Length: 248
View 1 (cartoon, rainbow, N blue to C red):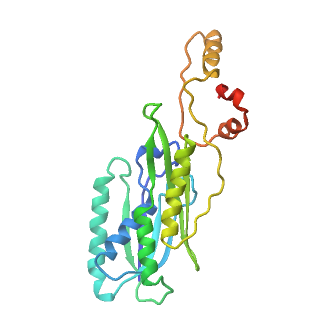
View 2 (cartoon, rainbow, N blue to C red; view 1 turned 120 degrees about the vertical axis):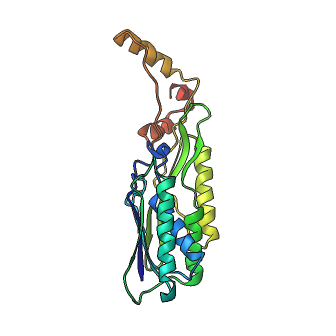
């Protein structure tokens, strides 16, 4: 009976800091489990990671069972991956650690073989991070998602992903991709907390007026910038009639 823990990651806000390249602990636990599964028979008893859907997970852990004769080789695989990740993430997450600790012989409720395969497949293939950069704003993230919470409950594996985009159709397409993956694996997907995208307008009538007033008040040009995050403006713009849409 072993505990595998991914930790030491930087984390951050899943919107404004998604472009920093910080690793996702849940995705890394999936990579670790797949590495072990490729070489030995693995049984999963527990999975838990992340605290908020809008925060990049810094920690995730798994409780697994493996045949006693494979204990040494599994520990070697995990230690090797730990060194690999330290090199891969030397700039973004220098404190990354993948630790494995023996818990002794034990009995536990575990996932069946097919469930283990589906869980690991999901963790390895569910999209995460930046999906599209803006074509209108140089260097600005347009569409992203963050696998923020993972929990193995008695009757199901549950995960919570935060999806963001300043383009409505991109967000809908990404939701559809995640939903399709979940349903193909026999699961169910539900969308909650949705809010409209606040799309950038190159022909804004409001922006020049703001610039004019700002210069009159402060005698210098304003700097207009954007952030990749959910704002109330998306809800407000969705309520404004079309004839006033150019004021966004």
